[in-house]
Amino acid sequence: MKDFFELEKRGTTVKREFVGGLTTFLTMAYIVFVNPDILSQTGMDKGALITATCLAGAIGTLIVALWVKAPMAMAPGMGLNAFFTYSLVLPHENVTWEMALGVVFLSGIFFLFLTISKIRQKIINAIPDSLRLAVGAGIGLFITFIGMKNMGLITAHPATLVTLGEFTQPVVLGLVGLIVIVVLETYKVRGSLLIGIVTTYVLGLTFGEISLSGSLMSMPPSLSPIAFKLDILGALQLSLVGAIFSFMFVDLFDSVGTIVACSYQADMVEKDGSIQKIDKMLEADAIATVAGSLLGTSTTTTYVESASGIADGARTGLASLFTALFFICALFFAPFIGSVPSFATSPALIVVGAFMFRLVRQIDIANFEVAIPTFLTIIMMPLTYSISNGISMGFLAHIVVSVAGGKVKTISPILWIVAALSLLNLLYGV
Image (cartoon, rainbow, N blue to C red):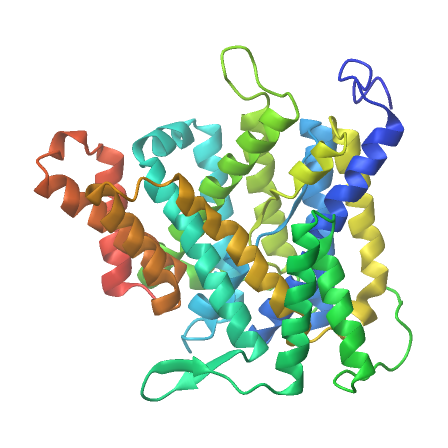
């Protein structure tokens, strides 16, 4: 094992890798609660989703551990699970969750093709950093909005569209959970999101909002209600083209950003600035997305929470192997995970959204040509309840501003193609 993972070469030990792997799992374990809660609103079986989430995390992370040999972990991604449920399935009667899984599958196939063919780098180079950052920040705002809605902190209003909700007991308990997470984050406590969810859950039990019957542990729920139920043919329609490319672009931007950030922290950068194993990492990301869609979950991606494990000493794939094993262990706590209500997971959504929104600090808002496209990208996501609409508006606005500013020659052919797809998405997409 030491030779396979090159522990001595990387200056680490089995104990240090175990601690790093555990830290990574604890900081991202909230997804085991949140992902089934979000996706089950489409009509998918929640127990099966718990199994799919844990297995997708375990399989994706195992690929990273044994093939890439990097200290990074994967799981169904936040933001894209919200897009799956709230933008793709719930608002459209003609889009089933089976078709949405087909969309995820196709986005993974396209992502894998882009990575293998090296087109990926051309796309990354063609798209301005400001738009890539705006996509992440916009998804953060969208997730926070969803968290507040699911908690009941904000509700629908016929005159103003949204308004402050009533402070019922579940809302108050959710706010207490939010405060717990914020306080723990202030003191940089590892696993603050998970602790916040569990704290809110315990308070829910104490005040009678949650009733627990039976054991907290059991054999994992069957995958049969959702596994291999994806409708690929149903996803191959013009109205879903924008959704396919939105899933692919968001996964691409998110994964590249996460891998680069974690690689610098883990000393996986060459002297010329190139990132070690980035092609393998992105290929693993795409393969994990395809595998996850077959299991029955939304896009699987590399988690930035891996940085917490790296900070605790993780340097090789052995840490990822331990993280994958913890995901497998989580399978046996399905009764507990399945009994966690939305008001307990919503605080985590709000805080994760805030984390993602911090990307705006890297955007040159003072530059008007940058400000308009990025602002439209960010604001259109929560206002239209759609990540793809935000991305489309941002790309089109960038083209308009560039043309108006006499910078047509700076627009690459790839960006013109993306803009055309964006227009098709706004005109004919779901």
